Image (cartoon, rainbow, N blue to C red; front, top):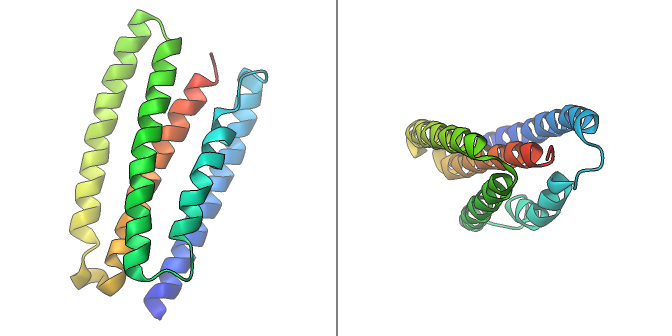
Length: 155
């Protein structure tokens, strides 16, 4: 029960932080190009169904894990689509820099996933370890999708 409350508190805090960052970023976006398509809003609309699933209080731990797996697959596809969108807007020199940036990000992601898998274990966090892993992994990918979409909105 305590772990579930802590996990709920963590999720609420994380969502608040993401919202605040999004609001601050929207201010910067408005200064850059107010006429650009709102790729972020479109992405958020598409991802809403997955976020509702992982937060469904009726799901068992196993169901939430399945929802996180589905969400992560969705985010991987969104990341690829966002990356391709940004690539379509860049010049050759910028493409090389983006490719290098993405390669470094993948190394970062893999290192973060390794940390998450080694730290959030059943021994350390009991039965909720998988839920934490899913939340952290999807948050890392979601943040990268949003960052790339912000880049794309500047073109």
